[in-house]
Image (cartoon, rainbow, N blue to C red; front, side, top):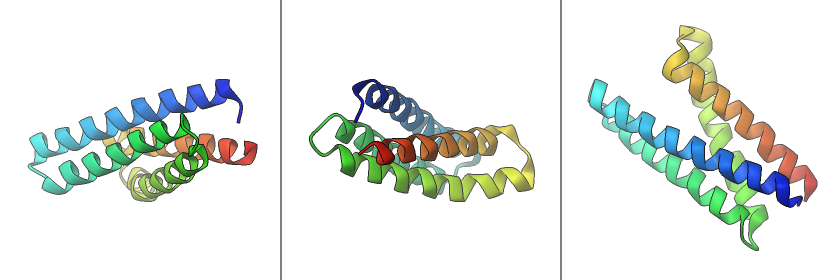
Length: 111
């Protein structure tokens, strides 16, 4: 895999993970949603793990984990955004998820 692309995707996954965790916390604070807190924490942690794995000998496992998590988030937030047209949180998470899927597919094709 190209080192430059790996670095870009690792940074993207870090930012995406932090925003996902923060979104889960905000969902808990604003709506008292335990589901948001748990889902945001788990999804964010898995994105962090995928980013970490990209920098190791298990980079392919990181790509696969990243694709799975990004697809799951896209599956949750794209339909929600299409239904509500709300930019936050559905629009932001839908966009981040779709970009994440695209980046992961690009990396997968490079391996």
